[in-house]
Image 1 (cartoon, helix red, strand yellow):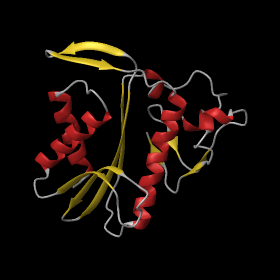
Image 2: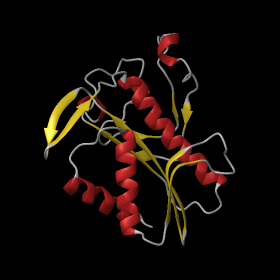
Image 3: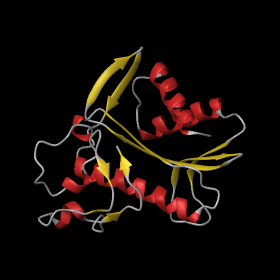
Image 4: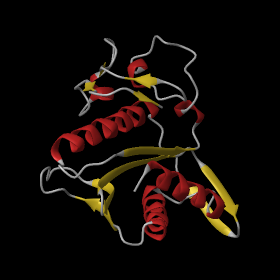
Length: 186
């Protein structure tokens, strides 16, 4: 598997389905497309690797040349619509600051997989959203979640931590900074 396979799968999804009911719907659909492209690969959902039993990887591809963890996020704002005669009612996930933290945490988890899995070849973190605040550059840089912004073209590296005025309610269970080994262009 190569990164082009992921691009082909996502392009196929774009042509088949414009919207998903949930992250699970997106996860299954992407896994299905990958299986079509890579018929000899083992595609696992919510895979718990033996070397990191507390982890659950959204999609885990085991191919002849190695393993490929894929982490997904599907963050929506409220939409009620019919697309190609199918009814969709997406809920508002809100809390974009937490969504951004969790997405970057997924990237960190993939870095961890690279260290632990001797068969690791590449990993992918994919976020699909209809909420523009995820992909648009912020208008203010003085926010408690500035380090976790994931707008288009942003480069992340080093340590990402909450701003000093973050409330304990916001950072609950997400207190630790995320420290990256690599550099990533989003």
